[in-house]
Image (tube, rainbow, N blue to C red; front, side, top):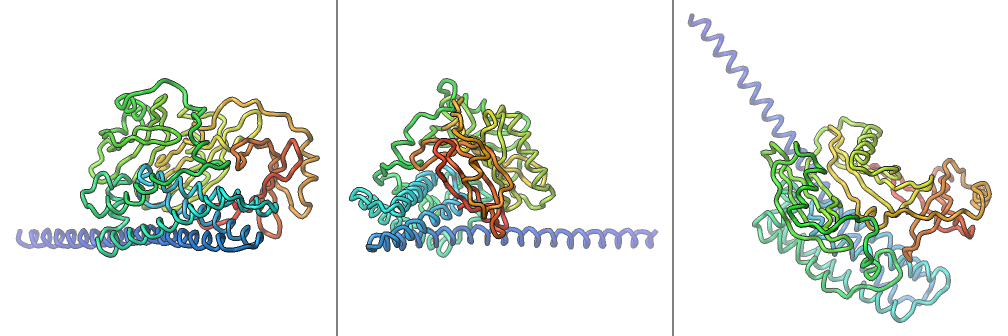
Length: 452
């Protein structure tokens, strides 16, 4: 009997020992992943800071140069850095609402410098009003640099708070965490950005144009409680455990903000949603889920995104762009009408690459621009348009598309995608005038394709 007990004891000791080893390995693996994730966030933050510092320097140079050629180069570089800064900003685990004005400022800055840079290329002088706006943008970017530097010092160097902490406590952490250092750091820039005079110019992100009523929002005004019904319908009643009401969003589309605790969730995972106050449409959704194991291919994730849009009543949406980062696939969809791709009607869908869950959704572009359009007839055939493209470009894809311009007008174009010396370019030929409306270069990265 004693021998039998000894055997049982040894079996239990070995079992507990193996469990301990497994638990320790899991603990180490989780810590390693958190370290990796934190390094990713820090890299995005430092890239954001570098881009804004470059913007400040480039704008300062543009203010003192007399050369039209140099002005074009400097303003074009400013535009590129503004786009990079926006991408970096969007990948930080910070509230979508909290950085709305900062993101809008970068959009305005990028679009304004692009428009003025294009103007100087065409040998048109910069007006006094435009010089005033450029000076204001420079001053604003200087302020943004100083506060990003202070944010880094306060939050990381002095406060011991990491981006991973904020991620684990949710993207609306500044409303949930009592640490004053987080709230002070992340809201300081935002509060000041809202006090700046708004730029008035003919660009797609200009303030006076953003005041236009969204065309795609249908229905009557709703209450906060009615917005909760929209959330349940969007996520599914089996996924919603608890709904907490957050702040109101003001902008092109006015929204109610909510935090959803998934059903059965015992950890820190949360889903954040904005519902339009007109019509009760879900405009934006972000799940704080962390994807640890990638098991789904991009083609499978794309099919999941397509099915999701159909389930939610979005028909005739065509995928136009993809990106992958941190175990999540991001797909851009544009609306198609009568065989014409309409880029202003944009929806973004994010798919978790472990199990295909939808963890992100953004449809503001769609709800602002979408309507039944009277598509003009092209003045010439696609064969004629093809002859207007450089014969050095080896075309492998072509179609009709409606694209937005800097003045927020829409133009019908023939879109030609082709290859030149190993690089991919997209050329847009205006279907009415035959003018080369726009050229984009597709840059392949390890996360997806970018266009410039």
